[in-house]
Image 1 (cartoon, rainbow over the protein chains, first blue to last red):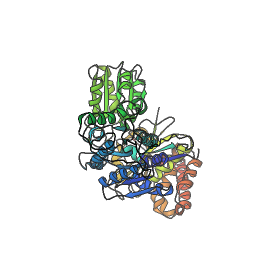
Image 2 (cartoon, rainbow over the protein chains, first blue to last red):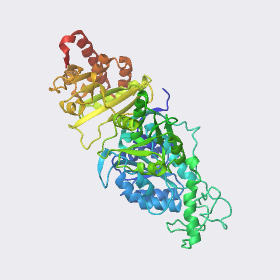
Image 3 (spheres, chains in turn purple, blue):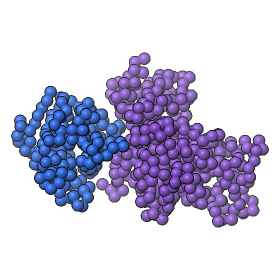
Image 4 (cartoon, rainbow over the protein chains, first blue to last red):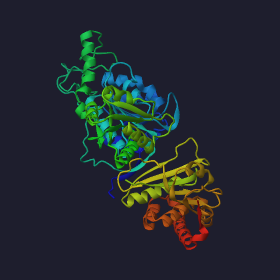
Length: 379
Length: 189
């Protein structure tokens, strides 16, 4: 056993991943089932010179995170569905003003305060569309404790590289599961720090269209004039409703993600090459699906699993490749059928797409997935 | 990948989660892949509580139990939520005083007064570790020294001496069970 092998719960792995990624500010309001992220951060951050603030509510928490990040510190908050709803306005502001930050949402049953201690996957579409307007979104769906750790690090890297909020979506099962994980070797860990503005302050445009689509950020105190605003703004930061400027500004926000799909998309394929029944699943449901696909293969059914790790932007081309031989696609998820809509949009004209949905606060059992794979294979 | 599924079930406050974590650590130390989960409800002391393990030679696919191979029940309240998940041929250990109506089915049932044994050693709070010792000794799912090392590493200092004695007592109870097989072992079909 090496010194860096640790037994961690998913929530603690999220906190430890954040610390490894360089997060030095956390503001949050405890909420089941994510509270242990805040709890662990309150212990870990002071040890590395960071700051933990328990705020008065969910809205203030994300607001404090945007403030800290604007000040140059890698920052995050953690919440669950009800808090995620409250944070949407400021997530939109982070997208518009291009403020890097990470929001962990440990999903529970909804709507509203719903079922606090029960797992769910009901925030998939809220992560995509929860804040108004056309905006870029990166959302990651880890399926194990180790992956929570790794994807939290990656969330910070993507957030810094693309100056955008990144959302981590996992569920109560993963958040309280104990698994042994290998912590990162800090010496070889690739960490991304946002690009800071350099050069003449006289010519500085805080929202300039660079080749990557991501403008360097002015570091407070470096003397650059800037304007942090949710109003649509031109390259100089001044609000504008001039159609050309509005189009250019909004399109750049979308393009900086769209043009870097290769870097952002992550997914896993199990036995998809010849799969006739393809299962598309994420988070804890993907763990059930992986067991079910193994079982189905043992029965002689050509089943496969496509698991998006980046759920937004959805890995469209990879899914289509994985579904090349599929005669049916099954989408098990702990909601009434959210990701299924996206799979239907991408593949529905060629292949039958079915859901396997639970909204009773119970995780999907491998046997349920196996049963439905068998039924689809027999059709 | 065939999995081994283990549950400690009973009442909140009996140390079931600690038992689960100690055994989890023993499996990890033995090079196995393992995942441990527990009940997560707005109840605590006195309500149903369970600590579950899924152990595998390779990556654990699905980390929650659905077909239990080894079940330890320290309180009657643990029976109902677990009974339907007992795998045919499973090994079930119960506290003979606190589980007056044990589950019935196609499995091997062993009973011992784990809590009373712990009281005799100094505290009812060590019943979880007595039962852990008996489970390990009866099943052979991991070796005794590995679980003893996990108890040494994972027990709060104030309880360390007691827990090591309790573990040993659990081994002895199991060894005696084997010796008086027909008395201690109840097989119900």
